[in-house]
Image (tube, rainbow, N blue to C red; front, side, top):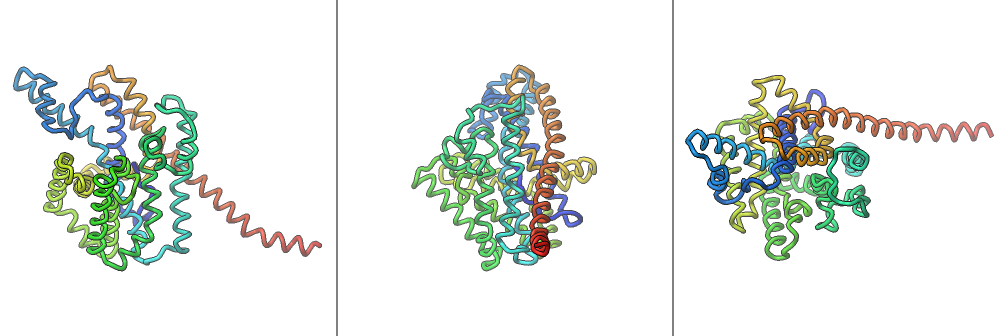
Length: 401
């Protein structure tokens, strides 16, 4: 999943944020590929006694084989929790939208212009992705094309939630959540301005817990609503990103120094581990996505900085992250198709094949997204030109008469 918003462009772009996006979208793509390949053949990485269950299945007969099985269990666990990076993208989205407005306090041209810009950033590539799914070979389309295709084109990934949330391309559920968050963002931004970062985060945290409690224990709503069909259940991650974007815009040096300390990194690890253990107890699940998203964002922020030790890797990840939206929209039908096709291969071979496949998809998605954006801008600029020339043309026609 990817955020369609970026904090800035050109010289003011924050490369470490783009690197986080790059790491996250590649991890998500591999998670989808690996999930199609492994097809529940291994114990759940989030289930109780995962390591012991994995060792029992692996059945090592020596200490060396035990070490190999533990390494394999660790690899499978990392590959299997790639969906956690979705929460990181929510934080990045809140950060990007707020960072771009925190300096002036108001969008240029007003909120209607802001809405127009967001929708034009979201929908053209989203529509093109629908067409690609229809006409492209080597894609997995497990469901028939029916009325839901039109609903999806319109941006509906919520109703009817049980049949459209994962329709055609399961990754597109996140698009519906983005639309909801963009719709309420002006209200959230004004609330942040009024309350300040601390009170705002407390209010959003309470709203998130209350939303999840009502959905889970009072309304007994479908689990998709908690996952993201209702934005309130994922508000914490977005609000945390907004607060970080606000603080980073006004106090960049202090925020950056605090974020990249060793103590903050270990706090992020602790939060992420707490999130992993919160899957079990029912009430603890109210905090799961908040803990995982916050902790993982901190971990990946540090990882993105560590990649600077290998400049080419850092540059590559930042470039992938800057154009992560297209890869998010396009990758899943392909990786599912080939993941299922290669189920007979060993894990080592299929992992190498998966990395090569994702590299090819990335290399194709980046220029494709750039082209769609350029075409959209060209069409809009032409319409603006035609509109501005229209009064002059009317005057010339009147003068001729």
